[in-house]
Amino acid sequence: MARMPPTLYEWAGGAPAFRRLIDAFYDRVERDDLLGPLFPGGVHEAHRAHVTLWWCEVFGGPAGYTEELGGYERMLAHHRRLGLVPEQRFRFATLMSRAADDAGLPDDPEFRAAFVGYVEWGTRLALANSQPDAAVAEHAPVPRWGWGVAPPYQPG
Image (tube, rainbow, N blue to C red; front, side):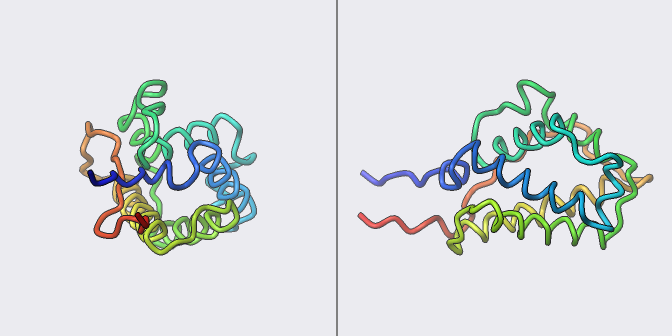
């Protein structure tokens, strides 16, 4: 019987790994001249905890963001009418990739391709949804990201 590949959440190391990622990311954001101003006074604990729940759920972990905070609609509400610009989207993606290194997330090409795929998809959607005249999808499920075309190699 073929063994199912682990979720990205499991492969990364579960909730502790995603919390390290989010802390490393927001530590970088707080020092960044382009993204830091979006968080006057810094990125507080509640925000970090909520974003960690989102990333855990997206990558195949427990549905904590949906169950505790309201799911997609809540995340959408945080990004609407922010007026993000393409440079901020790109900086977010860059800092998130660096934060994955800082946090010690797996660096195998299959995981990182899936990780960067989500970052690109999510930041482009957030950019579009942040525009004042955006026609947004008001209701959608939280995405559940997977391996795509290249699951991890697992001998045996």
